[in-house]
Length: 373
Image (cartoon, rainbow, N blue to C red; front, side, top):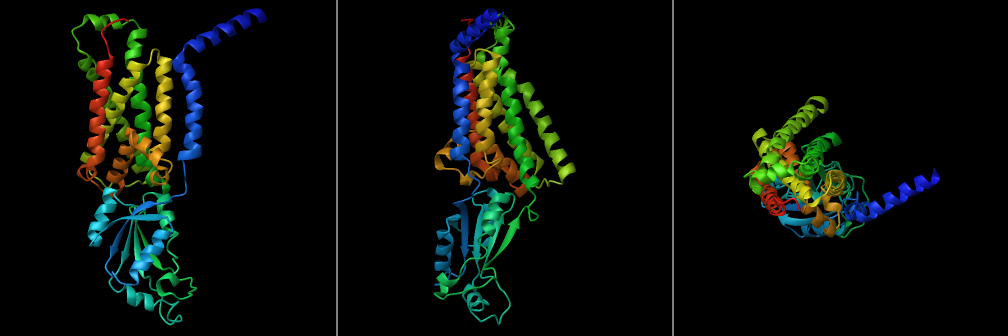
């Protein structure tokens, strides 16, 4: 009995060694997870993109802005002439926070209790406007409320009075579910859409239907489009279920227009389905297609900003994240659902998903050959 078991073991090991795709996944999946968790994943939000509205523009405001930038929590990427333009930038997702310094900042600073000996009521010298939909980002900005003012007035000041007031947009209650539900759209659609189509061509080959497809006048591009169209409806059903359940069960607000959400979902569903088709043309068996799907799914969950702040990742990890459709849809879904943005405000991400879909369909069509070999 032991000899027969040993023979089967040797046979399986030899078969596994000949399956290069499976052997590669055995090696690559642990390495990718180790690199993602050890190098790319960082819960400490640093260098967040921020804007500045400095209506004071005085000798007091400039050292204060430099002191805030020196903390490395935020990087000031843009200046805005008014609060309206700054709020629009937050809605579009260009910045995560905006520091507002009022015209009377100098007078506020001199009236601060630490300077005036406590004879005046506490009055912040400025205000932070924060995208509160991301609780990690909001917590990082709140850590800047108690900025020391001694660097501005060149005095040794000790006070417990906050230097800045913090206003959290879109999620003032700081409920994490508000940020999770729109993100789940990207994760679930990536998981299901890629999985459905990653085995589309392989399944036809394993079931013996490839001979029928070869004898038909169907062109490769027509076959690819026919493969993904039924799953577009499935994707929309999933989007409806997630948004409806999130709104009814967890009171997640849906501030944006449903037309914008439908367009963003359409772009992402098509991009995910085309990615699955490319995988299907690369894989030789359905097992290989499932392995490659998992290989794509892990970075999509960890690098898209669903679990960890995108801005906290190293630059190299951000480049990888930018190549994943889930990253772009994550921004769009959260912006539309929580910040009441329109697709026109998210033009870069929309065009990227459209281009990815066209590229994926083209590659899948070129790789599909109406030949059995």
